[in-house]
Image 1 (cartoon, rainbow, N blue to C red):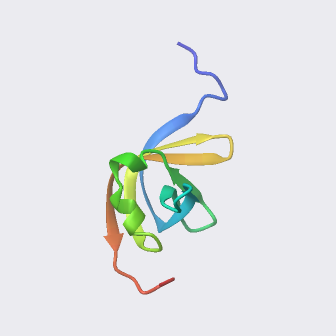
Image 2: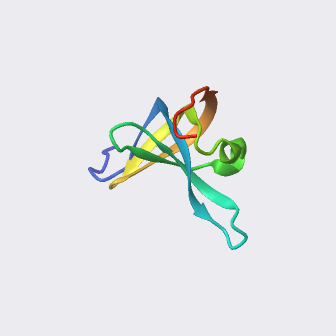
Length: 91
């Protein structure tokens, strides 16, 4: 089976960065978050419904493990687990 050149690649990875809200509903509840990593890499969380605890960790640094996919310029992560990191930065 041949793979298309523009097919999204997927790999398991642990990323480190700050959890940042990126979208809200009409009641101003966070509906999407991303992980802001070093070197201006932003990775959107694809399965926030399975990990609602990420919303309460906004502006907190965390290690997030999951399957990362890139489609065009957009990277997403299907989270498997996460660990908050104690820090005083950006608080």
